[in-house]
Length: 500
Image (cartoon, rainbow, N blue to C red):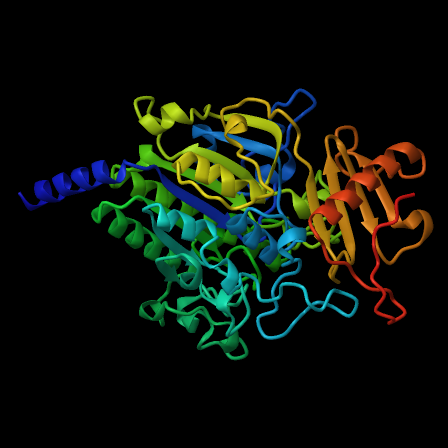
């Protein structure tokens, strides 16, 4: 009888919550397009194309989700994490919101020639009610954050997700990487040298043999259940610390990679991928058990290109066949996996009738991390008067062509693996401008349709195309009121793009 009552209660709660669709954003740190068994690359005819890395990684739950919905072969994020995370919650390009570098939690890491007044504090008090979770909460949603935050430095307003729209904050803080992935290390508190980066709020798992990916998933599932039992639609932002360094093996999956001819860090990275994938499966199982899967729209994505410890950062290696990795200006540093699907296909669902996502489909449309803001608001029917750079991707999610291919502006006036650059894509063309180079070395120009591994720089042989692309890049930066690096001579002179 008790079990029957519990079932009836959940049924009634799920009916109440169905007044609006639930949203799950499943965000993975440092996961690139090729770090999965799901083929995201498209051949010349737009069909899925497998590569060796797809046969190395094990992500059965990503496969499960991809079979239910649509995935993009050309979805872009910023080359490092904090700019993408702020873009997702604001709907703005990093050039406009000015959090253009990953946020150093303890000091301003603009770099010697970077703009010192960049938005280091991330999400600030003046945008308190303008973030995606704040708008959704105003629209009746229970807003839940679990995992990595990295929206502001220590002591700043943006440090804690509950300051800008989340009802629940599980383990989110200023730090972008965990002190430790292990409960036996208290997630950093008991690990000498890593206490400062320890993950907060998970004390009940301290001393236990549990991986961080598992702990924050258990907590997210509990928070989702609470929302369903309260009859509230939920916006669940499941933000994994994985697969960021430290590359500590998730021992649940280590046996799968014992015989791989790879260094320990690369094997550990693969186990972190598989642990993240189990988390996805556990949440999908929970949605089905609560009978809300058919009313839950799932967005899976990475926050920047891969950081897999395989090969040189600027080579065709860890994101092969793409060139580069995290923090570079090449496609391997910018393209991320993206899947949109209803957690359970059900043609009778009113929400799925409104947003009919085709099953097991690969789209070659271009999407950007800041497009999620208007796309989610459009799917939920929650209105916002906020200006955004993003567009509603719902036509593309239905398998249709977008009316106009969106531009992608990636602005990085700081020092990292690739330093002081702007990357701009429009249609099949991509131009990269290097602020501290001179002459022809300032420019890289690629036709990505013909040269996806960016091996053939056309800046010298296509001068008119270069001029048009650089003109569009300069106009996009000017329109966004972007900040720029300064000259190497220490004069403080601001450098702006030079159109040849």
